[in-house]
Image (cartoon, rainbow, N blue to C red; front, side, top):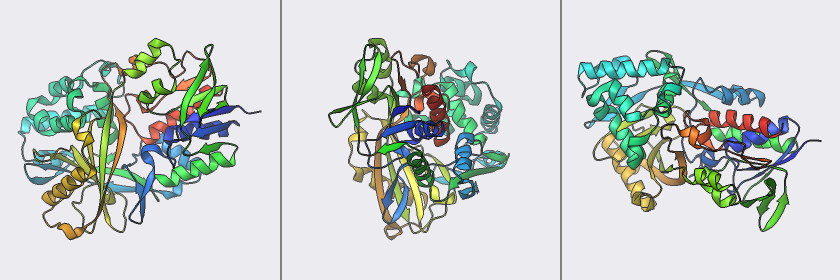
Length: 428
């Protein structure tokens, strides 16, 4: 007889936990506060277009993601596209992302270009992240690329994503981001990224259907208010004022919510969860009649733009209209996060028209802003050592979120792989 296990959160990690549990013959019940599955990968109706609230793409190294596609017979829906990168600098749109673009880049000396290129190349070849674990990222980058290349190519990417946390980030974490993009290249000069037909919703609904068809249950609009712990053991979860008994609970919700839901955890464990810091995001998605550029990813270094870059999604996944994501990252306590959506929509309209002066107001079909308070953990040096173990010192309780696959950056594939790993451990 399979075990009845509660799973908190129906994002990619929570769905992966439940998916693996039903594969192993158990009956998970997934509790999700939202009215849909997916978390940050969830889709919404954008003026008749079903699309993710936050952009996603896939690399050829996303093994856990590709494996579950095979298992669910979705591999034929995967599409790989040669994409381009660009750089908006000093009012000019420049190619980016390969050695020729680096050599031709206007704004850097030859020596700075060489140092930047060497660092990027060696980062993609590095396999062992442990020596970088306790190293501070900006110092590490400056030692390799020099002050000039840091100021031109790196500073704004840090300042407009991490703000006051910029000077205490893990070099291992930043390295993993460089390596992931580097591993998406199928030659020195060409980059290949992937998308799933129908977007992430295709996978999310397939996982949901599989879970429900094999004895699992997914309850939407069902937030858990408390995980009940007694005598060092899980008793169950409180939902809508009622106790639902469970011997095991796996939580995949953002770590800052954990102390609120599990106040009976040991004091030292609660303190570790309370110390976790996160970046928030206001992500604006624009639907246009014209393309802005030919690039999928566009880095920006412009004193008039408070963004590190933008993603022109339809240069990866073709759609009827042109879709651009413009993320504004900031700490959740930053005053800017409290600004109304319209302030961000107006900025995006202005920025896109600045990058492509051929755009006028009639080219903007629609704009929409989505907010996520805990979009990304801030990983300082030695980050993983500071987190509690996934298996907490409470019998039957496991807790994790995207923080736990550090130094890898948050991603669908990493969440799936880690979720399946937790499920096997929890059901053993």
